[in-house]
Length: 424
Ligand SMILES: *Cc1c(COP(=O)(O)O)cnc(C)c1O
Image 1 (tube, protein in one colour):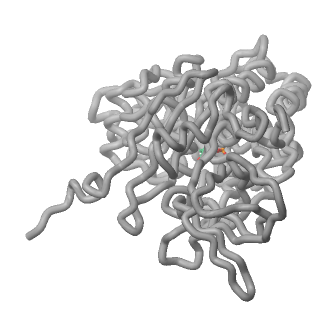
Image 2 (cartoon, protein in one colour; image 1 turned 180 degrees about the vertical axis):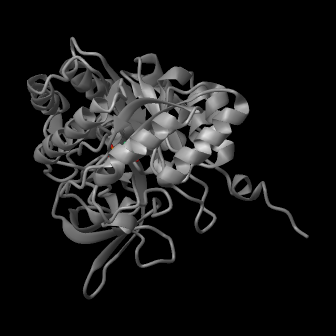
């Protein structure tokens, strides 16, 4: 079992009988830092980013990491140092990005419910662009900017009405979604924006969904957006940048999304054919930059054989890693130090008092209490969605760089979880 690679987890591999992330033995990390523990590979993140950078070689392109996927400061620092900007969705994310060393001019602000206070904070920080999602938001932003005596750079998020063929909870570009301005309304709304003195139209954007594994929805959305750019520019409004959002999927369970560079080779060919290849381009990838870079280590507390099901009860739960409970999402689960011998089929579940608290169903495992498991592809939308439900402190996080180990977040204590509360 020497150097056995694992599909979908490029920097995770067995050496002899031990699971490693880069050059770090995961059983050592679990012993030192306890479990549940999130561990991320810096090389995996930079390699995912490099695929986009290769795809955009020779173009004017800005990659804005959609930080809601994983907003831990040290993760943001890795991307900021690699030249990324950030796609934020709240004032809190703005504060985080700036604390991690982000360049404010490379920050774009998405989201359907930006408040006046958030707009003011972002204008004072001098962010690069507001991705505006409604006509009401345009008017409020104009008002806030005018009061501050500045002009807000804006792009309209257009809903291209393209089906990304992904889970309904993460489809965002269809007519029935709450996101963006309808394609049919876009021209009128652009003309309205151009008349507001507190705003400066700088771009157009779209984001059609998440965990997209096909190229066609992107090509279709691009056609729809370019049609609009042509129409808008005919009215004398210049669209400086075109932002194609994020959404590229990763391999969780044999999924085969196109590599970022291959996807962009096709998209750029279309842009070139339509005469837009030299425009300033922007993208907002989240999951595809961090998803496969992380694992969650968890200890088996009990095994519980049953008449219909066997349960493997672990110390990680839906509060730490909510994707299975929330979307019935699949994460591979493997032993950190596999045992020889025969395996049983288990549902891997957490200790939380909810039947939805599971991490994996019908998994073939040979485990005993005290064993360590690794939940793979846990870099995106896991820790950033974690909570304190059941008064569980959130896990610690570790960043691995070659053989180096950095503790980037301490484990929360029970006291931390109620530190802001008071008795009456
Ligand atoms: C969540 C989000 C992204 C990132 O999506 P991924 O699927 O993680 O790449 C990009 N843009 C917007 C507006 C988003 O809401």
